[in-house]
Length: 416
Image (cartoon, rainbow, N blue to C red; front, side, top):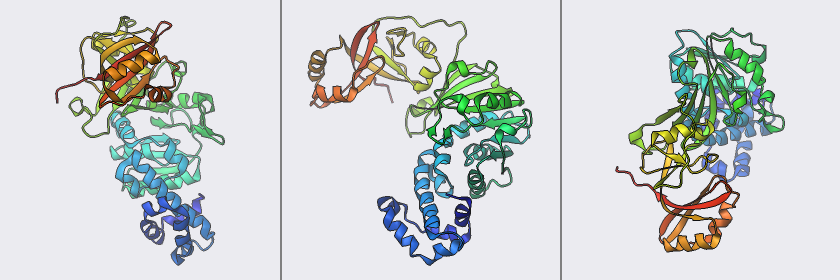
């Protein structure tokens, strides 16, 4: 999508045509929807200098992306504008607002710089917290889309966007800074931080040059790439790891390593709250190792990735099954968004024949298979178990040393 085609959607006539497209009908049959739009004289009139096919594509792309964007932005997505890459890399609304709340405490009335702002998800969250913010992006289409989103959400008094190269920004130019380096190249997603845009070293230098800064990175960022002076936070939403957030300067106060779990699903451990944290405890040491006890704990991916499994186990007086595997076990069940708790019914060496017999003895027909440290194909195993009873069971595949192990478990019951 080119900028002129996108800007044609922002006119009164463009918004009217866009609002009249049925997203469900477009999803069912895009070719039919495109045919209807090509025959609509209003579409050609949006910009007589552009091919009708380009305008039709811009309209339908926006309709599709708005529907897809609801997973990240909720119903707000129906008022927003997107590009495919911009939507993919944009921060989920709950995560952006969580970070913006922390950032706002250090704002002190200064204007924040959002480098590599993309379609504006993070600057919208900052402005929504009352923080004045200037977004910068090298992509002219992203700049146009971000400006449209600022207007759509009524934040023009607090947010603005300009085209620019983040790598050319002088360290210290923005006392309060947020940076989300682009992690996509011409061949798709980029995993090497040195290949980010701007490169990782440049982004870190910009963050270190600010009075307070947050640097967003992929959740798989190697621990050896973490800057020495930054506080690192791994953030997950509903059990899915989303990002690594690195905090600098005034925003780095507090724990040097943290796992944060956000929940969006209604009613999910509501008594525990929508946000849970687990912080590094200096001097704690490794968790003890023991045989399976009554309960098995499956920590959230944010806990695992932040290397805080020992801290999690310590909260419940637990022990690891194996020092290299992230499951831990305890005699008591404690509810928390930081982990899932399973009650252990049986423990046996891995054997398909023995496992099938044990599953049948439990009357299980619904089998969930989880694994860590096992090379077993879980889908094939589920089929091979040929479970057919009325009960449900979770089969956990792991190992102790070199010995493969199977644990048959049920969900732990907690009082409502």
